Length: 265
Ligand code: DGL
Image 1 (cartoon, rainbow, N blue to C red):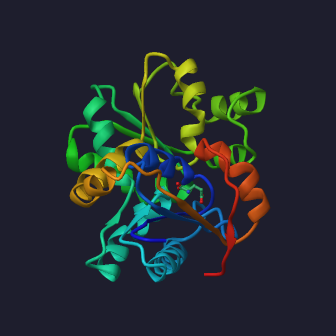
Image 2: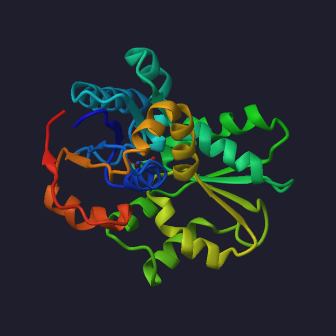
């Protein structure tokens, strides 16, 4: 696919980032790779996440993409710098810095609660990125691995989701930080529920802010394409479960997915 931007994630959750990118860059072509055979990355060691991320990025580079977006927060937090130096001069974007920046812009003195996978929380990438921008920020973090499992079932509302989310927000719903940073690809599907539960909180997700950064950096090329007034195409690649990808992927992307190519990394 010509002049596409490559996007990868451990699975389908990164389709929330692709959705934001498509809204901002409607004429652009994308290749999306979901490493569904090896999801979750969020419970793996840093060495394994780096290895998987390098394999995913290499596959996209071999497909001729002109830039890569690491939609997976876990891979962004742990492997971004390695990918940037490995694949230079190809632009490689992550989701952590844009998400941290957006949180810092809206956060008040009560601080921020980072909600993410175990690896992202343990590695501390968001905590470092926020402290770098706001050294006085009160930063809290909580690993929410069950949210990934619930979202992977295509569930964004209802009793099960309420119980899981309520469980992981315990101690934070009525006191503590009034900004929530959704530091995982899967979590934007719960935005509506979170807004309802916490109407006075700021809820920041890194998908939209990443799309803004990608669009502004690639602006010159993309403006030229934008004038063509065409709808960009998306090629979907997955390492397992293509039927499931087609069935559940639309829940994350907000549009139906008709064709997914099965690949090996
Ligand atoms: N894509 C991952 C992330 O954003 C969540 C799913 C996983 O654990 O692989 O951190």
